Image (tube, rainbow, N blue to C red; front, side, top):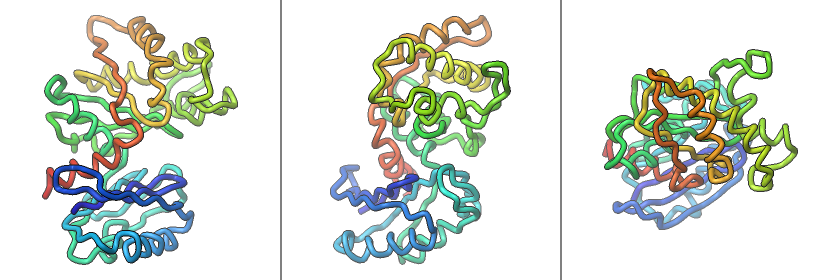
Length: 270
């Protein structure tokens, strides 16, 4: 059995996979704001809800910067934790289990890219939720050369000011602007304006990465149909002979991509 742990800003999901990649059990718990208490909660879940499972591998998805050499997570996007030895601490809780730690957006990108691997070999994955994260997957594997890339932190000109991309194009920014969640917005004009903001960052990434396809996931990405057409139109305006616009598609599992990415990374490294 394999264990996938997806640390969210408010909730943490623990999912048990069998060898074939089927989820056989899930457990959700509140993500405590205190790191020590978070570890206590994981230990309690292992001792109670997951006590009947024997794991050979575990993969933890962290919403932040991962030092792959040390297992430290130096920064978390929506949590105040800093420089925490996440891999070592989980290893202590999961004795005799090989533990992997990776950025959550990269894992989501891995699982989604593998779903379209027969057609697209170089994929740019963007997760648009509270913030904006992403990953580059080449030939079915996370590109280690850009494993620490944080696309949401790109500085772009918007409304006459230089801002972080996620400060005006994330789900948080959309909610701040409209007072509504993506699921509650049906106004085409709102989505057209939002598509313009997304296109600004995507075009910059296309110029550098030149992917075969772009996959949009995350909480806002789950509503891709609402802004797909205006996004395509905005990107076509920015297209030039040096930067072509590849297919931009919706994630097939926008809400579960991370845990399936945990499974896929385990399969690749087991």
